[in-house]
Amino acid sequence: MMEHLTSEQLDAAAKELLSSLEGRTLNVKDRLSIPSQDMPTQDAHERVCNMNEVALGYSEAQVKVEAMRCLQCKNAPCVKGCPVGIDIPGFIAKAGEGKYGESVEIIKEASMLPAICGRVCPQESQCQLYCTVGRSLKDVDKSVNIGRIERFVADWETSHGDKKEVKVAPPTGKKVGIVGSGPASMTAAADVRRAGHEVVMFEALHKSGGVLVYGIPEFRLPKKIVEQEFNSLEQMGVTIEKNFLVGRTAMISELMEDEGFDALFIGTGAGLPKFMNIKGENNVGVFSANEYLTRSNLMKAYEKNVAGTPLYGSKKVAVFGGGNVAMDAARTALRLGADEVTVVYRRTETEMPARKEEVAHAKEEGVKFLFLHTPSEIVADENGRVKGVELITCELGQEDASGRRRPVEIPGSERIHDFDTVIIAIGNDSNPLIERTTKGLEVNKRGNIIVDEESCATSMKGVYAGGDIVLGAATVILAMGQGRKAAKAMNEYLAGLEEHV
Image (cartoon, rainbow, N blue to C red; front, top):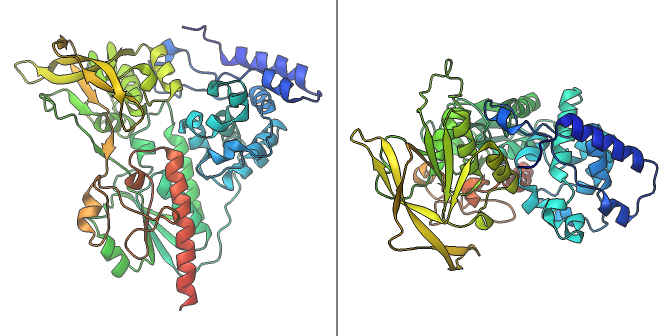
């Protein structure tokens, strides 16, 4: 493990470097030679004992140094990699000048959630993948750290009480319903409300935020940040109705026909966990990652003497999967008191879809990894509680549809491994409730709502959809991109209705 540098050490190094660079006219070669700024983090031994945010955020000196690495390319390839089209060179330039308020205002022209996206979006596979710096150095890990700069200016705005009031157009008399309250819905609600329409958001749970509150752990995304964004929506005039399950409390048709909504956006996400259909999945001590994370994130099971939800006592935990949710579940299990946590993945680390940063953090915290293995049976004791998992060794074969080499089981390699808890984190499907209760809504074979690619319009007039309910389990920023498309189309649709009044 590399030596852990404190925030103070990283800041001191950045200040020294900044002092040597300021006042100089930097050419491309100079900028390419500036080292990438590491993100300050809690020490691994300390953070596994708390739920506080792991990444501590850049210092002002680090932000200015990192901004100097940007080449300000005229063709801005990074923008092409951003699903919502943020003017990335523009906001980085302002950050480099210390004009943080102006920087965040540039971001907010395209994205209402910079504090969230700066923390959880996989920039390395989006904007930073196309960064000229990373390409010039032949290493995407050396691209300009766009997300870290975004996070800094968003947090600066909050800490300095400098949030500007969002301007809302005069009332149009039109009413829009937003089903769900995740990132796609939040984005759609903000953009539709700005156009002057009345907006009502329906959330099935007792807290708003969707996957941002029930799925992503506190140590990656503090819930107070999500609450702040909903406060902003309410200040804009968005009404949020909680404990309202569309498809049960009211149907889509009832909202449109009886409640007077002129348009609806469906952003209910992909919250139905997938299972492996292996023997023993119903044993006591087997959890879907959804349930496990919801108990911790939404119900705060980690507050052992306060939380009302029961906490399962685990010592040796197996997590099946290799994505970000698997990393979240594994790292949460350590914080909930497990002695040992092992991620079991059927391919190699190279093929893992999880962010490199999340894998690195998991390793630092002591999570173990067992690659090229897949479970065939979950074994229970006489009381039906998990006592082990039969794992089969795999080898990689030919590439499959995902472009990754397919895992092939090796006959006769089965062996029982000792575990007392299993968390299954192999992905989610769409909840079928709205599909089954909404006549005329077209979905594909996976249950995802079919929409027009440009407008996110569904097969029902006046009804739009976006986010994971359309894309399957995707990223926050991709969901936001669809929320923006849908809002633009809804605003145009509602303007057309006004013209015909």
